[in-house]
Image 1 (cartoon, rainbow, N blue to C red):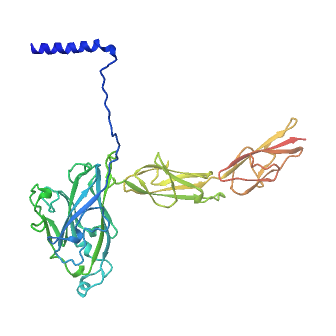
Image 2 (tube, rainbow, N blue to C red; image 1 turned 90 degrees about the vertical axis):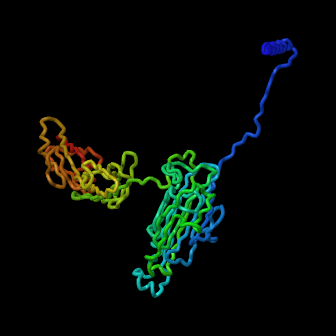
Image 3 (cartoon, rainbow, N blue to C red; image 1 turned 180 degrees about the vertical axis):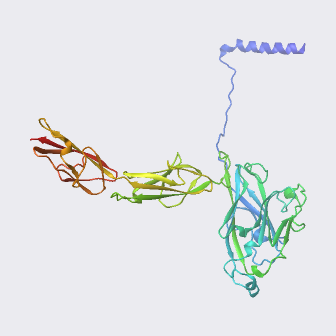
Length: 452
């Protein structure tokens, strides 16, 4: 019965509200949303480093979280064979997910002055130092405890000297294809700290990973109280590295991940090939054009690229059409690696050559005799049409040299008078006038005579 009574009370209340509606009082409600803002996230890469030298924390290469300015990951002026060091580098980005990349560049590898023992074994003299090839590094994805453990991924291992002087290498920490901490491509989440371990050895370096204790930064392990998961043996070193020195730059970069899903620390290698286009010009009928008069082009169906004759160019691997513009009156033929149409297939690593030979086409003059007047009229063939004083057949194309004066005339016929020469603009207006033709050009001139 209690539930029924409650229900009735509710109903009475509803009825009462309707009864007093005419007073102007209404049930109503309002909500206010305050303090609406937009705030941009941030990517601000900061780095700290904890460094050990022969198992002892090294103050000169240890620093707390900061933007790098003059900080050094290694600064050791008096190395002895078997010396070793370890750094745990922590990378902090701000609130936005980001990709992380590293770069190492060998900036110097100097022999400096030679001691007498060094000069006896150093074949390079003071030209190049040997230290860069004998300081070996191991980099790994660390959990922050300064030691290499059994499930931690080694990123890179070897001497820095393999880069070559001023050579560099980019190391992927986290990009769209690979992430050293997760094993799956993707960025580092914002507001998280990631750790990289770096160990070096003046001698032969090796790994002897410790069993993972899953304690991360709370672990009590250090290179002081353990092997650090690294072995170092300097027994094979000789006197050739005495007084040598090396310097290197180490840099890290963070790139926004949002709307940048395909980012790669190391862009995919562009497959390329090399192509040389040679131009040959054959002038044997008075032509005077040269190689520079022809504009050479290679085209992949999307982009046309200008080519200089005889200069090798590097192109993305694809199929190309080789062509030219600029000069008429020459017949082009293709040879070498191009087919008869000028097409060439460039596969990655190919080195190919195409030759375009342009052979001058002769110029041509055609003379036509037109005889007018009262019949009967003599035949056109008896008027003696001439080019350069040589009689030529009526209405027949005659090859002549280009870029030269050619006289147009006729013997004529008694009882007939010359009227005009008409036709192409290069036809002369009078008998014994001259015409100069370009390579491959053809003109037709009509000589009209009237019967007296």
